Amino acid sequence: MFSIQASAEKPYLWFPVKKGNPLKLVTVFDACDREHKVLELQIPWPEPEQQPDFWAAVSLKGMEGKNLLFCGDFPEERLSCIRQEKTRPDAQPQRPFFHLSPESGWMNDPNGLFYDSEKGIYHCYYQYHPFGTEWGPMYWGHAQSRDLLHWEDKDIALFPDETGTIFSGCAFPDKKGDAGFGPGAVLYYYTAAGGENPWSYGEEYTQRLAVSTDGGETLIKKQCILPHLADKNRDPMVFWHEGSQAYCMALYLEGNTFALFRSKDLLHFEETQRLELPKAWECPGLFPLPVEGKEEQKWVFWSADGFYFVGSFDGYRFQPEQVRKMAYLNTIPYAAQPFSGFCGKAIQMTWLRLPNTGENRTGMMAIPASLSLVERDGSYILRTQPAIPLEEPLFQRISAPVEGEYTGILEDRPVLLEGVLPAEKSAVRVEKDGNVLLELDGTSLRQGTLLLGKEQLEIPEELRIPAAEGRYQLIADRGVLELRLGAGLCWAAVSGPLSLEGRWSVHVSGK
Image 1 (cartoon, rainbow, N blue to C red):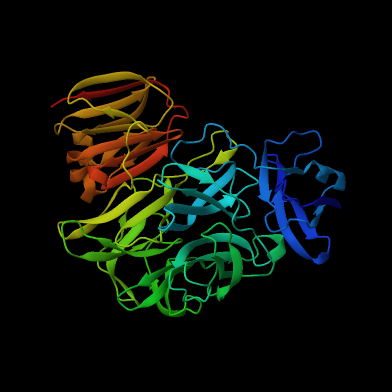
Image 2 (cartoon, helix red, strand yellow):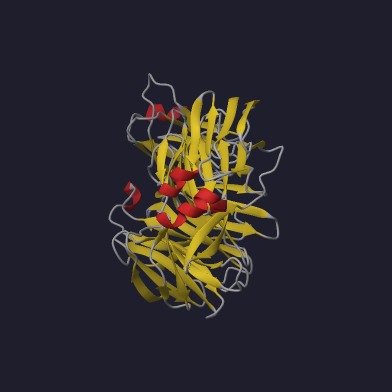
């Protein structure tokens, strides 16, 4: 065995990561209680002749003064490279400026989003594999922001244990204290994915609760909220329903089946509905949205791929009132979730399934968006807009000419291009260093196509007219392009240049 004395002066353990190596099991015990594990980690450990690609940090908070024993399924002497340090390793270079990304490792679904209105802080937890740049044993990472653009990295919030790895879930600020943990406690509902790590072999997927009484800094696991119901049931989303004065939960079960539940105390939930939603699966959301220009709101049932169903909800049952619609123009955005803690508006964060391009990190989040509904020809369509103003000097703003060409040398800072197609036959082409980033024209948009990055995108028929007639907005950050057409009725994200420095040109032609 290898041992380390946990110290408040050096509160982090650094573990070496070698991308592509097989996962090795590292088990941590308290020397005073060897019958119970403290941690079980699965790490692609370097071979003796290899140098780590990066180091991943685990906080020793709460373990200060303990003598920790480490066991590995490889020769004991190789554990001696574990380091005890004062801080986490430096974040990997060339991260996006305003799109939340991990310091290192793998990021996917946003989890536990909430806004602390007293402190003015947005919290984003997320699916996290700290020991690899691909999907693996899931933890919850954590970051926080005051403006939804600048993010501060925090320590890992939840670790796998004997109940499973930590799959997706939500946060709910319990302002009234109905769950019994005190007013203002933040409740985190998550899926324990039993059987996904060696420690939990033989266990099933269950829905569990963690609680924070320090504003989201420390999450303490508490209890099981729902037992296993079906297959790999997962992704609980909890909210308050004012009309029926109850707490409600949406949960994915299996196939295209979801379930709804009610509770009076946020701890005991009774099922009220099972519903089949065609092609929808995972990461359910159920929330009201305002209808622009009207004194009404509609309920939206959301699923991971961006399929949404507009209808009504009485606190017990959701009733779709129109056919399934798609929020995105492509499949890179995924698993969006709204922030809890707001009254009267919905702000959503979305994971972008962008490929690894050689860095020691994978994945990022879209810039958070505010949501509303627009009624067109008797049908409700989702509108997304950036939730915060995109102002100078944070962004290098380009105003597209009415006709002609703009050319300029830009710095390696985010770029914002906004313009309007001046006529049906007009065309816009955006290039960086001679590489086309965007091509669109009125005729093609009415036929339902455009080019963004290297992707040829299809526009649904009901959105082609607003896409062709409205404004366009292009946001460029390191490694990503976000495009909105029709004032946010169409939205897509694709891979972009890793550096924004260079010669940019915008060519507008035709009338």
